[in-house]
Image 1 (cartoon, rainbow, N blue to C red):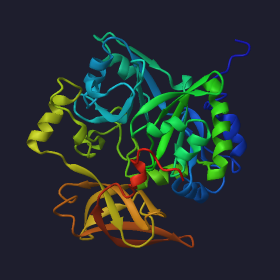
Image 2: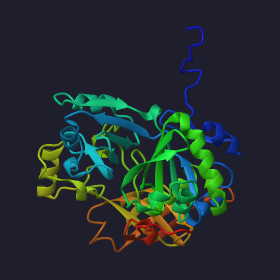
Image 3: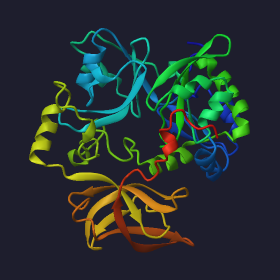
Image 4: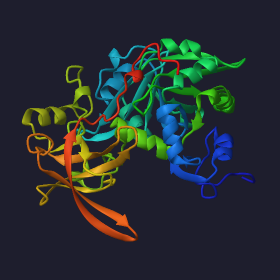
Length: 400
Protein backbone atom coordinates (compact mmCIF):
# COMPACT_ATOMS: atom_id res chain seq x y z
CA UNK A 1 0.00 0.00 0.00
CA UNK A 2 3.08 2.25 -0.04
CA UNK A 3 2.19 3.93 -3.37
CA UNK A 4 -1.55 3.43 -3.21
CA UNK A 5 -3.65 6.26 -4.60
CA UNK A 6 -6.29 7.04 -2.01
CA UNK A 7 -9.58 8.27 -3.44
CA UNK A 8 -9.90 11.24 -1.09
CA UNK A 9 -6.50 12.56 -2.21
CA UNK A 10 -7.59 12.57 -5.84
CA UNK A 11 -11.41 12.49 -5.88
CA UNK A 12 -11.55 13.23 -9.62
CA UNK A 13 -9.76 11.23 -12.29
CA UNK A 14 -8.26 12.74 -15.43
CA UNK A 15 -9.10 11.55 -18.93
CA UNK A 16 -6.59 10.09 -21.42
CA UNK A 17 -6.58 13.49 -23.18
CA UNK A 18 -5.79 15.49 -20.03
CA UNK A 19 -2.16 16.19 -20.95
CA UNK A 20 -3.39 18.16 -23.96
CA UNK A 21 -6.63 19.59 -22.58
CA UNK A 22 -4.89 20.91 -19.46
CA UNK A 23 -2.23 22.59 -21.59
CA UNK A 24 -4.92 24.25 -23.72
CA UNK A 25 -7.09 25.34 -20.78
CA UNK A 26 -5.93 28.93 -20.45
CA UNK A 27 -8.53 29.81 -17.80
CA UNK A 28 -8.03 26.62 -15.77
CA UNK A 29 -11.81 26.25 -15.85
CA UNK A 30 -12.79 22.74 -14.80
CA UNK A 31 -15.87 20.94 -13.52
CA UNK A 32 -16.63 17.39 -12.37
CA UNK A 33 -18.38 14.94 -14.69
CA UNK A 34 -18.95 11.27 -13.78
CA UNK A 35 -15.89 11.17 -11.54
CA UNK A 36 -13.62 12.98 -14.01
CA UNK A 37 -12.40 16.53 -14.32
CA UNK A 38 -13.56 18.09 -17.57
CA UNK A 39 -13.06 21.49 -19.18
CA UNK A 40 -15.85 24.06 -18.92
CA UNK A 41 -14.12 26.24 -21.49
CA UNK A 42 -10.57 26.68 -22.69
CA UNK A 43 -10.54 30.43 -23.23
CA UNK A 44 -13.42 32.35 -24.75
CA UNK A 45 -16.62 30.30 -24.59
CA UNK A 46 -18.21 32.52 -27.25
CA UNK A 47 -15.42 31.70 -29.70
CA UNK A 48 -15.74 28.01 -28.88
CA UNK A 49 -19.45 28.11 -29.64
CA UNK A 50 -18.74 30.07 -32.84
CA UNK A 51 -16.24 27.43 -33.94
CA UNK A 52 -18.77 24.70 -33.22
CA UNK A 53 -21.42 26.28 -35.44
CA UNK A 54 -19.17 27.66 -38.21
CA UNK A 55 -16.03 25.53 -38.27
CA UNK A 56 -15.51 22.53 -35.98
CA UNK A 57 -15.08 21.83 -32.28
CA UNK A 58 -13.34 18.96 -30.49
CA UNK A 59 -14.79 17.85 -27.17
CA UNK A 60 -13.36 15.29 -24.72
CA UNK A 61 -16.16 12.76 -24.35
CA UNK A 62 -14.21 10.26 -22.27
CA UNK A 63 -16.09 10.78 -18.96
CA UNK A 64 -19.31 9.53 -20.56
CA UNK A 65 -20.38 6.33 -18.79
CA UNK A 66 -19.89 3.33 -21.09
CA UNK A 67 -21.03 -0.25 -20.54
CA UNK A 68 -20.00 -3.25 -22.63
CA UNK A 69 -22.75 -5.86 -22.97
CA UNK A 70 -22.04 -9.19 -24.64
CA UNK A 71 -23.07 -12.82 -24.62
CA UNK A 72 -25.69 -15.07 -26.26
CA UNK A 73 -28.62 -13.26 -24.62
CA UNK A 74 -27.36 -9.71 -25.20
CA UNK A 75 -30.16 -8.79 -27.63
CA UNK A 76 -32.90 -10.30 -25.45
CA UNK A 77 -31.46 -8.65 -22.36
CA UNK A 78 -31.23 -5.19 -23.93
CA UNK A 79 -34.72 -5.44 -25.40
CA UNK A 80 -36.01 -6.38 -21.94
CA UNK A 81 -34.07 -3.48 -20.45
CA UNK A 82 -34.79 -0.61 -22.85
CA UNK A 83 -37.83 0.82 -24.63
CA UNK A 84 -36.83 -0.04 -28.22
CA UNK A 85 -36.56 -3.39 -30.00
CA UNK A 86 -32.83 -4.12 -30.05
CA UNK A 87 -33.37 -6.99 -32.52
CA UNK A 88 -33.90 -4.26 -35.15
CA UNK A 89 -30.52 -2.65 -34.43
CA UNK A 90 -28.12 -4.06 -37.04
CA UNK A 91 -24.37 -4.40 -36.43
CA UNK A 92 -22.56 -1.20 -37.30
CA UNK A 93 -25.49 0.96 -36.23
CA UNK A 94 -26.47 3.11 -33.25
CA UNK A 95 -29.83 4.11 -31.86
CA UNK A 96 -31.02 6.53 -29.23
CA UNK A 97 -32.94 4.83 -26.46
CA UNK A 98 -34.12 5.11 -22.85
CA UNK A 99 -34.98 2.80 -19.97
CA UNK A 100 -37.46 2.85 -17.10
CA UNK A 101 -38.12 1.30 -13.73
CA UNK A 102 -41.11 -0.99 -13.13
CA UNK A 103 -43.35 2.04 -12.59
CA UNK A 104 -42.63 3.30 -16.09
CA UNK A 105 -40.51 6.21 -14.85
CA UNK A 106 -37.33 7.18 -16.68
CA UNK A 107 -34.02 6.05 -15.25
CA UNK A 108 -31.86 7.46 -18.04
CA UNK A 109 -31.51 7.89 -21.78
CA UNK A 110 -28.50 7.25 -23.98
CA UNK A 111 -27.11 5.68 -27.12
CA UNK A 112 -26.76 1.97 -27.82
CA UNK A 113 -24.00 0.89 -30.23
CA UNK A 114 -24.14 -2.50 -31.96
CA UNK A 115 -20.43 -3.04 -32.56
CA UNK A 116 -19.21 -4.97 -35.61
CA UNK A 117 -18.06 -7.96 -33.53
CA UNK A 118 -21.50 -8.46 -31.99
CA UNK A 119 -20.87 -6.66 -28.72
CA UNK A 120 -22.98 -3.73 -27.57
CA UNK A 121 -21.92 -0.48 -25.94
CA UNK A 122 -24.46 1.45 -23.86
CA UNK A 123 -23.50 5.09 -23.28
CA UNK A 124 -25.33 7.25 -20.76
CA UNK A 125 -25.09 10.17 -18.37
CA UNK A 126 -25.37 8.41 -15.01
CA UNK A 127 -23.85 5.25 -13.51
CA UNK A 128 -26.18 2.23 -13.38
CA UNK A 129 -23.97 -0.85 -13.00
CA UNK A 130 -25.75 -2.38 -9.96
CA UNK A 131 -29.12 -1.94 -11.67
CA UNK A 132 -27.79 -3.39 -14.93
CA UNK A 133 -26.33 -6.38 -13.08
CA UNK A 134 -29.59 -7.02 -11.22
CA UNK A 135 -31.49 -6.81 -14.50
CA UNK A 136 -29.15 -9.40 -16.03
CA UNK A 137 -30.30 -12.17 -13.66
CA UNK A 138 -31.63 -15.03 -15.79
CA UNK A 139 -29.81 -13.91 -18.95
CA UNK A 140 -26.58 -15.32 -20.36
CA UNK A 141 -24.87 -11.95 -20.66
CA UNK A 142 -21.77 -10.17 -19.45
CA UNK A 143 -22.00 -6.54 -18.33
CA UNK A 144 -18.79 -4.58 -17.84
CA UNK A 145 -18.12 -0.92 -17.06
CA UNK A 146 -15.65 0.05 -19.78
CA UNK A 147 -15.64 3.79 -19.09
CA UNK A 148 -11.92 3.83 -18.25
CA UNK A 149 -11.02 1.50 -21.13
CA UNK A 150 -12.32 3.74 -23.92
CA UNK A 151 -11.07 7.22 -24.83
CA UNK A 152 -13.61 9.25 -26.79
CA UNK A 153 -13.78 12.55 -28.66
CA UNK A 154 -16.72 14.38 -30.17
CA UNK A 155 -15.90 16.19 -33.43
CA UNK A 156 -18.80 18.46 -34.35
CA UNK A 157 -19.53 21.29 -36.78
CA UNK A 158 -19.90 21.96 -40.51
CA UNK A 159 -16.19 21.23 -41.12
CA UNK A 160 -16.18 17.99 -39.12
CA UNK A 161 -15.88 15.68 -42.12
CA UNK A 162 -13.28 17.90 -43.78
CA UNK A 163 -11.15 17.51 -40.65
CA UNK A 164 -11.59 13.73 -40.72
CA UNK A 165 -10.66 13.54 -44.40
CA UNK A 166 -7.46 15.52 -43.88
CA UNK A 167 -6.62 13.37 -40.85
CA UNK A 168 -6.69 10.18 -42.94
CA UNK A 169 -10.29 9.07 -42.40
CA UNK A 170 -11.74 10.06 -45.78
CA UNK A 171 -13.65 6.75 -45.97
CA UNK A 172 -15.92 8.03 -43.23
CA UNK A 173 -17.81 9.94 -45.95
CA UNK A 174 -19.95 6.83 -46.50
CA UNK A 175 -21.23 6.84 -42.92
CA UNK A 176 -24.88 7.79 -42.64
CA UNK A 177 -26.29 9.24 -39.41
CA UNK A 178 -26.25 6.61 -36.64
CA UNK A 179 -23.79 4.35 -38.46
CA UNK A 180 -20.29 3.37 -37.32
CA UNK A 181 -17.14 1.76 -38.69
CA UNK A 182 -13.55 1.01 -37.65
CA UNK A 183 -10.46 2.64 -39.19
CA UNK A 184 -6.70 2.43 -38.78
CA UNK A 185 -4.99 5.00 -36.59
CA UNK A 186 -1.31 5.43 -37.38
CA UNK A 187 0.71 2.25 -37.83
CA UNK A 188 -0.87 0.01 -35.21
CA UNK A 189 -3.88 1.71 -33.68
CA UNK A 190 -7.59 1.56 -34.36
CA UNK A 191 -10.35 4.10 -34.02
CA UNK A 192 -14.08 3.54 -34.26
CA UNK A 193 -15.96 6.47 -35.78
CA UNK A 194 -19.71 6.88 -35.36
CA UNK A 195 -21.82 9.54 -37.02
CA UNK A 196 -23.38 10.67 -33.78
CA UNK A 197 -23.31 13.73 -31.56
CA UNK A 198 -25.11 16.08 -29.19
CA UNK A 199 -25.24 19.26 -31.27
CA UNK A 200 -27.83 18.68 -34.07
CA UNK A 201 -25.03 19.46 -36.53
CA UNK A 202 -22.79 17.45 -38.80
CA UNK A 203 -20.72 15.49 -36.34
CA UNK A 204 -18.84 12.36 -35.39
CA UNK A 205 -17.69 10.61 -32.25
CA UNK A 206 -14.33 8.85 -32.22
CA UNK A 207 -13.55 5.95 -29.91
CA UNK A 208 -10.10 4.48 -29.30
CA UNK A 209 -7.92 2.93 -26.61
CA UNK A 210 -6.41 5.24 -23.95
CA UNK A 211 -2.86 4.59 -25.17
CA UNK A 212 -3.79 6.02 -28.59
CA UNK A 213 -5.70 9.01 -27.24
CA UNK A 214 -3.00 11.66 -27.53
CA UNK A 215 -2.03 10.45 -31.01
CA UNK A 216 -5.64 10.83 -32.14
CA UNK A 217 -5.91 14.31 -30.60
CA UNK A 218 -2.66 15.41 -32.26
CA UNK A 219 -3.59 14.31 -35.77
CA UNK A 220 -7.04 15.90 -35.56
CA UNK A 221 -5.76 19.21 -34.20
CA UNK A 222 -2.89 19.37 -36.71
CA UNK A 223 -4.98 18.54 -39.77
CA UNK A 224 -7.96 20.53 -38.53
CA UNK A 225 -6.06 23.79 -38.06
CA UNK A 226 -6.80 24.82 -41.66
CA UNK A 227 -10.53 24.47 -40.93
CA UNK A 228 -10.47 26.42 -37.68
CA UNK A 229 -10.79 23.37 -35.41
CA UNK A 230 -10.48 24.25 -31.74
CA UNK A 231 -11.06 22.39 -28.47
CA UNK A 232 -14.37 23.23 -26.83
CA UNK A 233 -15.66 22.85 -23.30
CA UNK A 234 -18.96 21.87 -21.74
CA UNK A 235 -20.33 25.43 -21.81
CA UNK A 236 -20.26 25.65 -25.61
CA UNK A 237 -21.54 22.09 -25.99
CA UNK A 238 -24.46 22.83 -23.66
CA UNK A 239 -25.40 25.86 -25.75
CA UNK A 240 -25.51 23.64 -28.83
CA UNK A 241 -27.55 20.92 -27.15
CA UNK A 242 -30.20 23.44 -26.04
CA UNK A 243 -30.50 24.63 -29.64
CA UNK A 244 -30.80 20.97 -30.63
CA UNK A 245 -33.58 20.42 -28.08
CA UNK A 246 -31.81 17.44 -26.48
CA UNK A 247 -32.44 16.47 -22.85
CA UNK A 248 -30.01 15.57 -20.07
CA UNK A 249 -30.78 13.39 -17.06
CA UNK A 250 -30.88 15.28 -13.76
CA UNK A 251 -31.03 18.58 -15.64
CA UNK A 252 -34.23 18.27 -17.68
CA UNK A 253 -35.65 15.31 -15.76
CA UNK A 254 -34.77 13.56 -12.51
CA UNK A 255 -33.73 9.92 -12.77
CA UNK A 256 -36.13 7.55 -11.03
CA UNK A 257 -33.17 6.09 -9.13
CA UNK A 258 -32.27 9.43 -7.52
CA UNK A 259 -35.61 11.22 -7.15
CA UNK A 260 -36.47 11.83 -3.50
CA UNK A 261 -40.16 12.50 -4.15
CA UNK A 262 -42.42 10.41 -6.40
CA UNK A 263 -43.91 13.47 -8.09
CA UNK A 264 -40.48 14.46 -9.41
CA UNK A 265 -40.12 11.42 -11.69
CA UNK A 266 -41.11 11.53 -15.36
CA UNK A 267 -42.33 8.94 -17.84
CA UNK A 268 -41.36 8.68 -21.52
CA UNK A 269 -44.75 10.23 -22.32
CA UNK A 270 -43.89 13.26 -20.16
CA UNK A 271 -40.57 13.69 -21.97
CA UNK A 272 -41.91 13.19 -25.54
CA UNK A 273 -40.05 9.87 -25.84
CA UNK A 274 -43.15 7.76 -26.41
CA UNK A 275 -42.20 7.41 -30.11
CA UNK A 276 -39.52 4.90 -29.11
CA UNK A 277 -41.75 2.63 -27.00
CA UNK A 278 -42.26 -0.71 -28.77
CA UNK A 279 -45.21 -2.36 -27.06
CA UNK A 280 -45.14 -5.25 -29.56
CA UNK A 281 -41.67 -6.58 -28.81
CA UNK A 282 -42.64 -8.45 -25.65
CA UNK A 283 -41.97 -7.74 -21.98
CA UNK A 284 -39.73 -4.85 -20.97
CA UNK A 285 -39.18 -2.81 -17.82
CA UNK A 286 -42.18 -0.59 -17.14
CA UNK A 287 -44.34 -1.99 -19.96
CA UNK A 288 -47.47 -2.57 -17.87
CA UNK A 289 -47.30 0.88 -16.25
CA UNK A 290 -46.68 2.61 -19.57
CA UNK A 291 -49.55 0.75 -21.20
CA UNK A 292 -51.87 1.88 -18.41
CA UNK A 293 -50.68 5.46 -18.81
CA UNK A 294 -51.33 5.36 -22.56
CA UNK A 295 -54.78 3.80 -22.25
CA UNK A 296 -55.88 6.15 -19.46
CA UNK A 297 -54.34 9.22 -21.15
CA UNK A 298 -53.05 10.12 -17.68
CA UNK A 299 -49.81 11.85 -18.67
CA UNK A 300 -49.50 15.03 -16.61
CA UNK A 301 -46.47 16.80 -18.10
CA UNK A 302 -45.05 17.73 -21.50
CA UNK A 303 -41.45 18.53 -22.41
CA UNK A 304 -41.58 21.38 -24.93
CA UNK A 305 -39.66 24.14 -26.61
CA UNK A 306 -40.47 27.79 -25.89
CA UNK A 307 -39.90 30.97 -27.84
CA UNK A 308 -39.64 33.85 -25.37
CA UNK A 309 -39.94 37.54 -26.14
CA UNK A 310 -36.92 39.76 -25.58
CA UNK A 311 -33.31 38.72 -25.10
CA UNK A 312 -33.03 38.00 -21.36
CA UNK A 313 -32.26 34.31 -20.73
CA UNK A 314 -34.96 32.55 -18.72
CA UNK A 315 -32.85 29.91 -16.96
CA UNK A 316 -34.86 28.17 -14.18
CA UNK A 317 -37.80 30.56 -14.59
CA UNK A 318 -41.42 29.69 -13.80
CA UNK A 319 -44.11 29.60 -16.49
CA UNK A 320 -47.59 31.03 -15.85
CA UNK A 321 -50.93 31.01 -17.58
CA UNK A 322 -52.37 34.53 -17.82
CA UNK A 323 -49.60 35.77 -15.48
CA UNK A 324 -51.40 34.20 -12.52
CA UNK A 325 -51.50 30.41 -12.50
CA UNK A 326 -48.20 28.52 -12.40
CA UNK A 327 -48.21 25.80 -15.08
CA UNK A 328 -44.58 24.79 -15.47
CA UNK A 329 -40.90 25.60 -15.24
CA UNK A 330 -37.93 26.04 -17.54
CA UNK A 331 -35.15 23.45 -17.36
CA UNK A 332 -32.66 25.10 -19.76
CA UNK A 333 -32.57 28.43 -21.57
CA UNK A 334 -30.39 30.40 -23.94
CA UNK A 335 -30.24 33.45 -26.15
CA UNK A 336 -29.37 31.49 -29.30
CA UNK A 337 -26.65 33.21 -31.33
CA UNK A 338 -27.34 31.06 -34.39
CA UNK A 339 -31.13 31.30 -34.55
CA UNK A 340 -31.26 34.82 -33.03
CA UNK A 341 -34.05 33.71 -30.70
CA UNK A 342 -34.58 33.63 -26.94
CA UNK A 343 -35.25 29.91 -26.50
CA UNK A 344 -35.90 27.49 -23.66
CA UNK A 345 -36.70 23.89 -22.83
CA UNK A 346 -39.59 23.60 -20.38
CA UNK A 347 -41.84 21.19 -18.52
CA UNK A 348 -45.48 22.26 -18.81
CA UNK A 349 -48.55 20.77 -17.21
CA UNK A 350 -50.97 19.42 -19.76
CA UNK A 351 -52.94 20.83 -21.56
CA UNK A 352 -50.92 24.07 -21.38
CA UNK A 353 -48.50 22.53 -23.87
CA UNK A 354 -51.17 22.52 -26.59
CA UNK A 355 -54.78 23.72 -26.59
CA UNK A 356 -54.30 26.01 -23.58
CA UNK A 357 -50.91 27.39 -24.63
CA UNK A 358 -52.12 30.72 -25.97
CA UNK A 359 -51.50 32.88 -22.89
CA UNK A 360 -48.18 31.73 -21.43
CA UNK A 361 -45.86 34.08 -19.56
CA UNK A 362 -42.38 33.53 -18.14
CA UNK A 363 -41.30 35.12 -14.86
CA UNK A 364 -37.68 36.22 -15.23
CA UNK A 365 -35.54 37.89 -12.59
CA UNK A 366 -32.94 39.89 -14.51
CA UNK A 367 -29.81 41.05 -12.68
CA UNK A 368 -29.05 44.64 -13.58
CA UNK A 369 -26.37 46.57 -11.67
CA UNK A 370 -26.55 44.26 -8.64
CA UNK A 371 -30.35 44.44 -8.43
CA UNK A 372 -32.90 41.92 -9.64
CA UNK A 373 -35.78 43.19 -11.76
CA UNK A 374 -38.87 41.06 -12.23
CA UNK A 375 -39.99 40.67 -15.84
CA UNK A 376 -43.15 38.95 -17.08
CA UNK A 377 -42.43 38.01 -20.67
CA UNK A 378 -44.70 36.41 -23.28
CA UNK A 379 -43.82 32.90 -24.45
CA UNK A 380 -45.06 30.52 -27.13
CA UNK A 381 -44.78 26.74 -27.46
CA UNK A 382 -42.72 25.78 -30.54
CA UNK A 383 -41.02 22.62 -31.87
CA UNK A 384 -38.26 21.66 -29.48
CA UNK A 385 -35.53 21.29 -32.11
CA UNK A 386 -34.62 24.94 -32.68
CA UNK A 387 -31.61 24.17 -34.90
CA UNK A 388 -31.75 21.39 -37.51
CA UNK A 389 -29.59 22.06 -40.61
CA UNK A 390 -29.71 19.83 -43.68
CA UNK A 391 -25.94 19.23 -43.43
CA UNK A 392 -26.60 17.13 -40.35
CA UNK A 393 -28.07 14.38 -42.55
CA UNK A 394 -26.28 14.92 -45.88
CA UNK A 395 -24.48 11.80 -47.12
CA UNK A 396 -21.80 12.16 -48.30
CA UNK A 397 -21.19 15.15 -46.04
CA UNK A 398 -20.02 18.48 -47.37
CA UNK A 399 -16.35 19.44 -47.57
CA UNK A 400 -16.23 22.91 -46.01
